[in-house]
Image 1 (cartoon, chains in turn blue, yellow):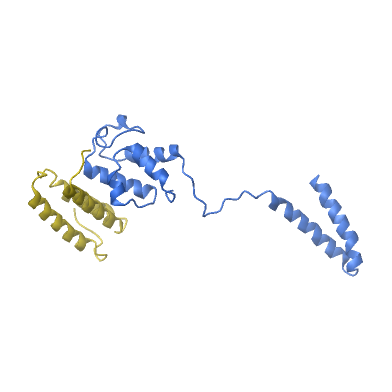
Image 2 (image 1 turned 90 degrees about the vertical axis):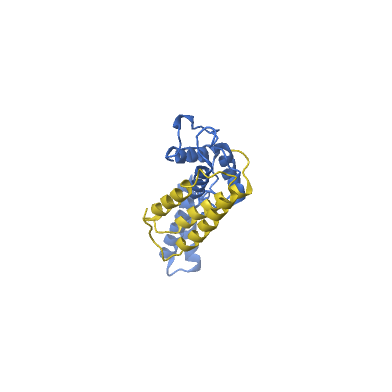
Length: 139
Length: 79
């Protein structure tokens, strides 16, 4: 299909070329053939994502990254209690200073800054997940 | 976690500021600053939460220390 179209347009170009510029008919025909070849692959790459587009974190990904981060946190007393709904102090045995550290680590993981007021309200993994999901610039 | 008093929140805010300041330090000594911060706060973790004057004094001291150690000229700290 495409090859036929290219050939047809090349033939048309080589036929049209002599009419306009007889002395250099050959090069003109060749360049139009070359152009039509270049246009076709470009048309199939239309779904290129721009770098400025938001990454769009999924809930599972955010949850997984926070759980991984807590797995590596040395103060977690009972790693078997780690789940998406764990409460920092009730389930994981973290005190308020540790909670601050966890929230800071989450900040760093997603490269955002959480204001003190919001940070004080994050006491459990699901709250942290929903906060991250509500931040458009977290990634 | 139970609802925190204003003073408790001030302490946590200072802790957060200290850890933020540690991030500005060179990567290889950052851990020393973080450990130092942890140690300084943990040392007094058993203070009675009604002991307002002591806590306020420690807060002032902590803020002053943070000001000193946040200076970019200070690149390392001994543990």
